[in-house]
Image 1 (cartoon, rainbow, N blue to C red):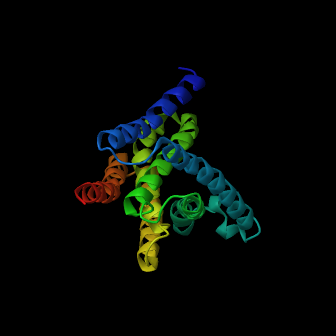
Image 2: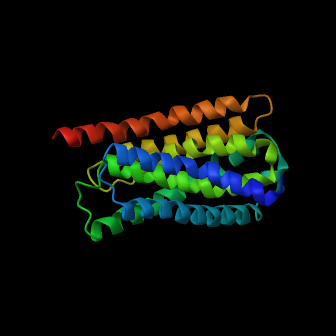
Image 3: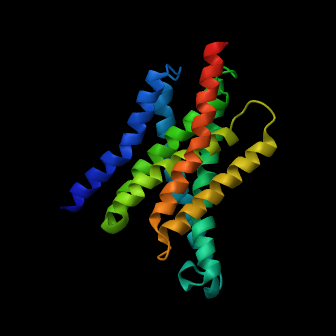
Length: 232
C-alpha cells in the first residue's frame, strides 16, 4: 500500500467521527446551523496551526538552555516534559486562545448569550477537537504500526479535550474556577494519553479506553442541555 493510500485511509477514518456528530445533531434536532458547524471545524484547523507555532517556539526556547534539558537528552524529567507539557499544554493553550476569540466574535455577530451556553460551547469544542485530530492523523502515516490505533483513539481524545476547552472558554457566567479546572484536566488527560500510547510496557488499549471514557462527560453535558431546552 502506497503512502498516499495510507494518508487517504487515515483521513477517511479520522473524518468519520465528524460525520457521526453531524448525524447525531440532526437526529436530536440540535439547533446548530451548518455555518456554525463549519466554523467550529475551522476552529480546529486554526488551533492546529497555532499549536504548531507554539511548539516551534518552545523547541527554539529549549535550544538556548543547557543540554540536560533538551527533549532528546532522555530521562524521566524529559519524558514528563514531552508527554505533559511540550505537546499537550501547547495544544490545549492553542484551543483555549482560538475559542476565546471565536466565542467573542460569535457574540458580536449576533449569537445571543443564551445560545453561547454549555451545550453550544461543548459541542463547538468537540467538533474542533475532531477536526484537529483529522488533520493530525495525516502525520501518523509515517509510522504504519501505530497509525490506525492512534487515528481511532486520537479523535475521541481530542474531541473530549476540545469540549472541555470549549466549556472553559464559555463567555457567559462566572465560571473562572471551573474554567481553570477544565483546562488543567484537559491538559493532564491529554498528557496521560500520550504517555500510555508510547509506553512500550503498557498496552495502547488503556489509552483508547481513557480517551473514550473522557469523552463521556462532555457528551452528557450536551445531551442534558438539549433535553432541558426541549422541555422548557
